[in-house]
Amino acid sequence: MTIKQLSVFLENKTGRINDLTRILGREGINMHAFSMAETPDFGILRLIVSDVERAVEVLRGENFAVMLTDVVCIKCDNRAGSLSTILERLSERDIFIEYMYAFADGAMANIVIRPNNLEQCVEILQQCNCNIQNCF
Image (tube, rainbow, N blue to C red):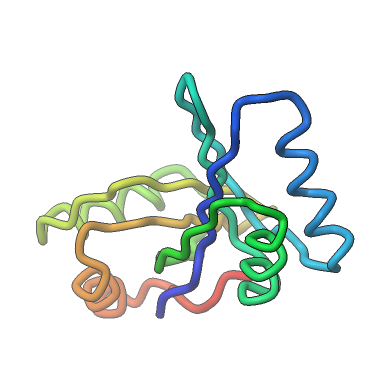
């Protein structure tokens, strides 16, 4: 199972991420997870939200450049070695992880990954009985 991730391109200027969070908050859209990367000219905010379609609509309406991407969310035990075991299975089958981000909540961890081959990645994770249901 895959989920939709928003990638939003932000100018590197003070307050721009606050503009985005204010808009989503005003619209009642919750940010479940996010990661931010930067270059000298702009940042890329990758996020999982409660209402993907509405978020895309309102952000584009406010002149944000938004792209949708399919990603996989894995829920696993929050203990040493859990992620390594999962990544080893993917590596054995030549799945390359383009990027990933994660957060832990008590005994469980949620890992969002963007693999080079989404369908094969999901198939492998299902064969390994990984929890790839919607984590949010």
